[in-house]
Image (cartoon, rainbow, N blue to C red; front, side, top):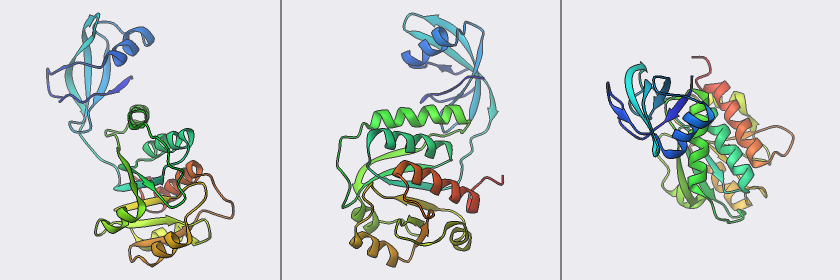
Length: 239
């Protein structure tokens, strides 16, 4: 069944107004009409079955009928990824959402090639991925911040999986030894971390430095591989 993410509150008999683009998708692409059902979620009130009650020139009107799943959240893991090229960053956001990441934080490292980031585009990609994968929330995506500033204000109790291209412990064993969430996974830029950044990261008490294997991976590939390893070792794949 079609799933849509909406910002509106969801409750019995609540009227829900999708965006104009969502309305066009429902009526022009999926050919839905009055009386047809779909699933709707907002990240707070669970998932609801809604019925199309009106089709107007400016969009459709839905009515929430029944909650089909209560609100639930996945594991507490964040993706910290350096700002990379547009296509790679968009791919990483999509796959991170599919893999259950709760938050995506864009970072600027010494070797980051600073460029404009369309946050609205990344938000749209995350919403579409959440709709398709069946999750009940959409990860928050933060504006870029310098890595040093992020480390200075690090959240107490959150572990950091540092994916070091120069080598580290085998990921599965190191993660399992460190234990469960909350976690963050850090992926660097195309040129890798600077020696100064690597030195600081390795001495932090909350850091687990890991290797992603013998090959140098692109940032988007590294993000997907690292999150897959994290999920397999300490995530929610066994639920």
